[in-house]
Image (cartoon, rainbow, N blue to C red; front, side):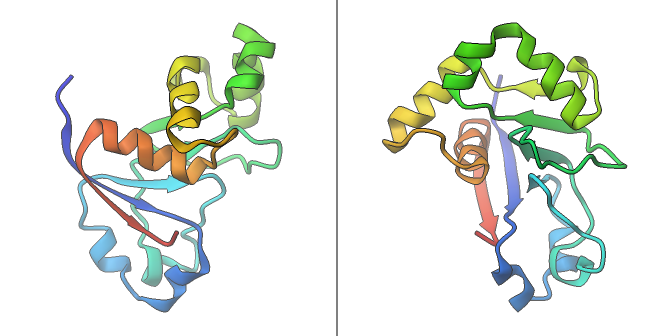
Length: 144
């Protein structure tokens, strides 16, 4: 599958509050956000547009009222090895969506990320950047 042109990934760092980029952010064709992102009351800073929700289906993940068009889930390889296919029950419950509504990054890809970074359990933020680099020609990040 050919790479798409451009993605903007907005992190949850407090630095996003230093800039009122909301209007510019919403002009990007693809905007990705991470885990428990919030745009409510922050739209002047981070915009409202969300095309991709990157998350780790973490225990404390807030269920979204509006699910973006694309949901990418990063689960650490050690958990994927242990849980196998039953992981989908947990993901669906935590995200409040069906298996068909999200993409789980493969165990092989997650192991590659760990090896590439030299860490176990990379953050959702760094995993989303690595995923984006594989799927887009240009990746812009803000708020990391």
